[in-house]
Image (cartoon, rainbow, N blue to C red; front, side):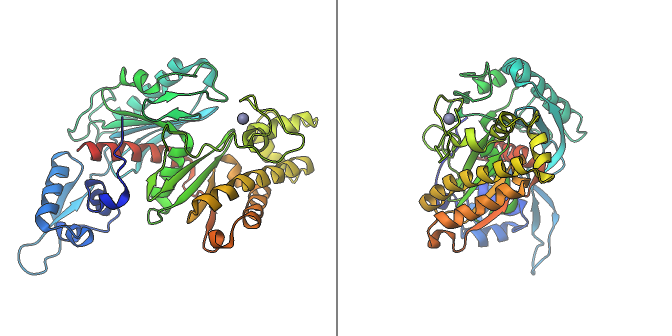
Length: 396
Ligand SMILES: [Zn+2]
């Protein structure tokens, strides 16, 4: 369950980095890896052999000769659905089977009733992972059998829309998940699948998926997930930063300026989540007498230019911007990206951006990229797959 948390410099030429160079096409041979890592050819060869024996790399025919014997070309095995991923949301879950490069082989979205409780919900989603992996002709058939044989399932990554204690995989005081508090997701899943199960919160998975997809070259990044709830994931020195317990980046209960300060599920008032989340917008509109039942309805009103909904979206954007300004001043990231369903909400984004520029030090915003998460609906399962792949490589 624990993931190697060595700083990035210590990983120069580590198995994970070798694999990534091959996966991204930066290297196609042992010689390329030696040049990129600065490691001796014999050390690179040793590490490559270890990765090949674990089925994490393969030799794909002969490459171009520069005189002498033609070098064998390296590749990450693609096509096999060998990583299971679940991105659980408030009303839906995205479930996928991915290959060792983090590419989605099969995926589908399922409706979810969180209030049915963890056993029912997770049991059904794990069964779906088994179906997706088993239906891939390149895979070994079924999620219960694992190991390093070609085509066998390597692990399952799961994202939860609430705080997760990373060392144990246990859910701690989630806002909108009745019956899930204290539930040990990792232990429950370990009893059902025969491979490592890695659990994290959904914002961390989005951060990892977006970072690996869009900006793997940037070392410092903050990703805001704004949907029914609101949270963030932090990439520091190229790695997901979880903090001591796994709660790093959880901005949902930071206090913002709001008058009146709406009550929050945590017992306090004026939390970011109570002002700027999708759930908060639904509540606020209903209190103003607007008959809206969910976030989809809110977004439709904003798209139609509804005055009340747009004003609330602007207020939410300012609140997110205020908290984000503190984060940016403190952490000095290269990129801040917003994802989740509210990321498409233009008035929210515009006021978030304006507040950020207004409240940040010029040095912090001079070269700061502020953008939308571009990776689409599979960003969470992509992050989940990378959690598993990193774990498998570290274990190898
Ligand atoms: Zn709160």
